[in-house]
Image 1 (cartoon, rainbow, N blue to C red):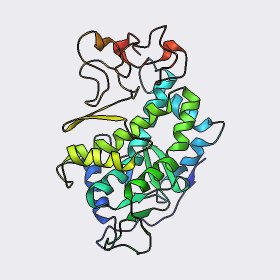
Image 2: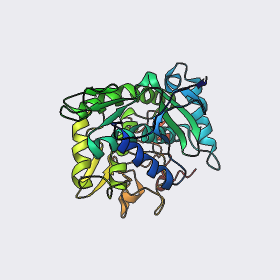
Image 3: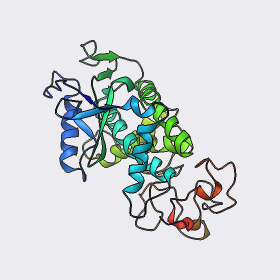
Image 4: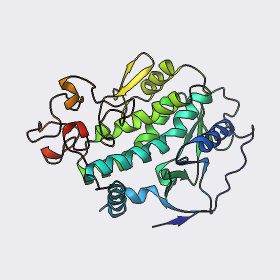
Length: 304
């Protein structure tokens, strides 16, 4: 189901509380390899056909299943369905979360795209996310507080938490049901989506990532609490994203896989099994057959 929308995004001006964020997103779009997966204006226009994100959560999940299968086919030789589901989610979650993370870090003005207003389309970035309407959450005392389109709130972390549970929770549940990937592992991708933009754009954002990233994660709390581990200015995931091979040089800097020694042959989320027969039934990364647990990890001996 596609929906053609005719909304006017407007030109970023200082009268616009999101003007600074929209300029930053435009700069990001110009430099991002593969393009930006969220419209810099944040508002969908009639220039493209869009699909409501809620269609992905509509049982029996035919559209979501088709996107997961298409994701699996993007890699030569395919990939396990749970790996494809995790990869699709990592992409969607990143672009949906990015504007909230950057708005919070830039000037404490957070754009909220409610689930019922959020739309997406396939793009070179994997997916591009936008909304038919955006509300800007601001703190009391903000110069734009009380203006049309703003919501004055005492706690931006709570607002982001509610936005994640509203806008991503139904999709996390749907992907978990379709693929067997544990919801905690999927929320780990959302946690990283809050952190990565602040680290990547540290040169143009206030504060130091070593301080702002843990502060943001702590302010949001559930469902991302405890899903990143911090060591000084660096962070690593606590759960596996299931979307990268674990070979040296191929994994992200935040990869949870341990490097070196015998531990390099196992997923560091438990450091006991690498997706082989006999994996623990309590493994939180996948609820499928034991042989499928961590099957995306090349270190586990299950190349795809």
